[in-house]
Length: 585
Ligand code: ADP
Ligand code: MG
Image (cartoon, rainbow, N blue to C red; front, side, top):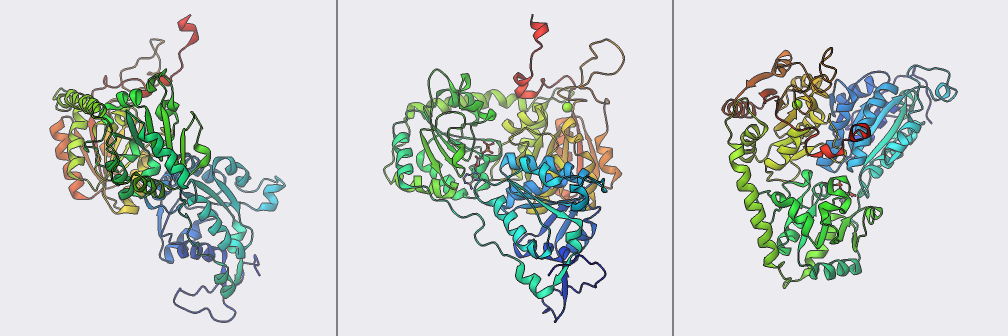
């Protein structure tokens, strides 16, 4: 049985050795063994009391332990690892303040349906529960609960195997999300018999079982789709997460229906595909009569499925594919809910469509194509602008070309204007290559996603960052340099939030709240840690710098000087800013 004595010597045999009689193991090793047994290879962490040794021992046991400067970014790295791998990404933090820092990313992962497990050390239960003021005292389990899918605490070493199994299942089954696992300091030091300990570990069988839609639901969906005059498919990041790429492509191609990828679903089919309706977004949302939602939610990003953007009073009918039954009717009525995993659902649709499924009316697909061609033609000259200082379009025209030439690179993207414009301008050609601010539109994912993306995939990363967005995670350039990751950061530096030209309304004193230090040299931040910095003021300089950086596979930061007057308030979502009632009166 478990004991909490730390005087005994723990003789943890390596995996190949058979434990001898009387050999002991402890909480540290059981936790590491439980993760490894379930195919988890990486931990993203910030060391400290009481988990410093856990990181050391995990490294000694062959895990990759990536150590950050702030827990939020370790958490974002774990979350994106979950999105990319369909296995829960692991973030490890210290108690109270470290735990709280990690909680932002746990909540963000849950909101985005990314599987991750936040494991935090915690203080002595007896003291915490009597509120006697322990070192970093906090009831972490209670605080985590409302912010994630599930939260567990383990008190006995022989429960570690079951606890990790529960955490993994909770993170990846059904709608994926974040899980909290509370590990009190005492637990890690508890010892138990090595053989019993190994027996207590659980290898999770079929952690995210297929969920097959019933035939009636498939028939109902196709009956509705058959009546459509102006059908549309919307692909969301759930479809990208599902890794059912072939099945999704087959369904879209077979249907012949125009499709709209949500930002992190870009590349499931190449954005240059003839059915892609991204460049005719407003038109298709307004005019579609039947919409098939594939792993996308009708939340604020899609104007909740109603209102002017959807051409109301005309009413749209929805077919929705989602693994979460409660997603149905969350914003508007869903005429044909299809509950199941994406792969099973789209395959069932394709199969039931048979060989003689009619293509959508040419009148509709022609209208979409014309609108799209016109918008693309309108955009083209802007991307070639040579005006100085550079504007967003000119800089993005350069990056568009570079991304097209490097289809395997991951693109991380955050900012306001830098985000909105890059999302529209930069085409993706492969799935799960675009990682961005997601459901919340959160700033601060940049360096965490860049590190997680590079570590999980081994592919180069191009992080396209607004100067403000970069600031939330900028210190992690040291992490990128320390691990020598192939990350090229491009900062769209327009001297501030939205733009750099605002003035203090009082006419004096401090600078305006949205304004930063003029002409800041972010490139020198990278140089401080041994990476390569570039300073680019023209599209030509930008192109040379980014290509050189991406070729080098080394940590690089390109400071792209953008017109400080360019940029609109809050980018595309300025309408979400409240208006002062007084100034209107
Ligand atoms: P987007 O922001 O791209 O529109 P959302 O995050 O809003 O995407 O929606 C993703 C949806 O995908 C969620 O409702 C989630 O339940 C669903 N989902 C995630 N994984 C799967 C899966 N494997 N099968 C089916 N649905 C899934
Ligand atoms: Mg800016």
